[in-house]
Each structure stands twice: as C-alpha cells, then as structure tokens.
Image (tube, rainbow, N blue to C red; front, side, top):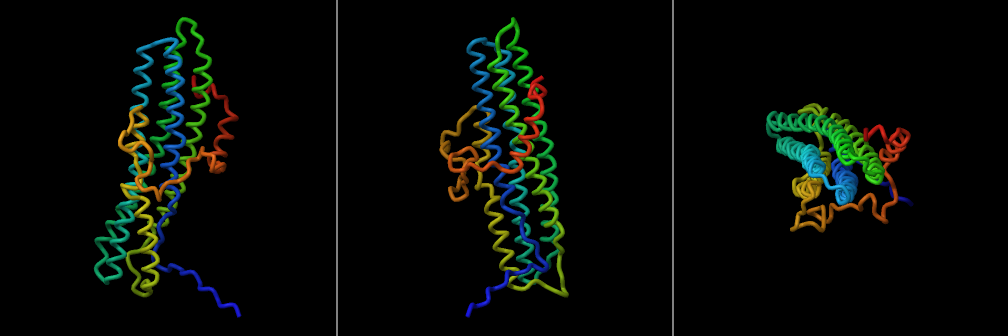
Length: 284
C-alpha cells in the first residue's frame, strides 16, 4: 500500500521571500555581459589608438569606464536593500514567534521593502543611462579617430556589435528588475498581525528558513561588486582576481561558458528585436 505523501505547507498569513534568481541574475549580467563588452570595446579602442594615437580619445574612453563603474553601484544597492528587507522581516517574525509587540519591527520591514522597490526604479533608469553613455562615447571616439580620412572600419564594426550586446544586456537586466519589483510588491502586502488566525509554529518555521536563505544570498559578503567595479575601470583586484564570488557555494556557471549553452529568454527576445534595428542607429 502506497503511503500518502505529505501535503505542502500553505502559508496563510506570512509572505514568502522573493525568488533568489533576480538578485543573482543582475550580478551575472554585470559580469557576463557588461564587463566583457567593455573589455571588448577597450581592445578595439586600443587597436585604433595604436595606429592613430589620440590623447583626447584616450581621455574620453577613460572617463567612460569610470562612469560605467560608478553606475554598477546602483545594482549593488539592490542587493543591500534586499538584505535589509530580509533582516527586518526576520525581526518581525521573531516578534511574532515570541508574542512581542510587532509594531516597530513591522514598520522597519515596511520601510525596507519600500526602499528596495525605490532602488529598483533608480537602477532601471541608471541602466538606460549606462547604455546611452556608451553609445555617445562610441560616437565621440569614432568622430575623433575618423579625422583626416582615417580608416576606422574595424573599430566601427566591433563597437557596433559590442553596443548591441550591451543594449541587449541592459534590456534583460531591466526586465529582471521589473520581475523582482513585482515580487517585492507581493511581499509588501504582508499584514502586521492576524489575531483571528495567527500563523502556526510550522508556518513560522518554514517561512523563517526561506527568509534566512534569501538573506544569505543577498548578504554583503555574497558578491564582489568592488572587484567588478575595479575591472570595469581597467584596474585589477590583485588579492582576489580568480573568482567573482566570495563564497564558492554561491558561484554559477558563466553564461558564455561551454557548460551552459542556454541563453536566457529575455536575452534572446531583446537580442532578436535589437538585431532587427539598424546598428548604425546606436553609433551615430
């Protein structure tokens, strides 16, 4: 006789945390799309500089890399805000479990989730600025280098393709952020208490475990944003340049590696749309 399988717990009162995917995915996009394409552009610019040196063009590109690095801080802010949301939700759970006054921890949780949603909106705007900044810089660079009828067709071709990849990455990043924002809005619906139907100990235990896991993946030590920003500036994190994760257990296979041939849906979707547009539109 087959024994009946235990039924999954239905959370009646408490909200589960958002998916782990958005927080880790925006980090992957930064490392697997933004950084490689900036490096690709850098190689193209250096090749052009070797043939047609220009101090003005060099300065323009150096400033562009610094600005790109600064913009990654807005993505980093989302991981910090996610960690704070998890921390405050767990404090709220502890107050519930110990039958203490939940008003203050609940208020802190609400403030944290509101701030996380706000930071997502800011990051989405900054990602669009990042794409536009690179487009403008490519235009400036090619204009400087094309003086005196110089042949810069290799630079134009390479920068156009790189910009297309960056634009695709930005669209995917913003789509992931939008998905994450919707999940946080669901968490935002958490009530302060339900005296008629208080959560069971089992519900408290399961929800606590899931929020602890979310807190861990959002923690300040889970990712190496500073190393990414140094790389984007053309600098190296000499102490820890071998890995982009502080905790190897959190590492994931890079999108472009031989072990991962799947392209994310949003990346395929937006790449198909953008490829239908004239690439020249982005570099004018």
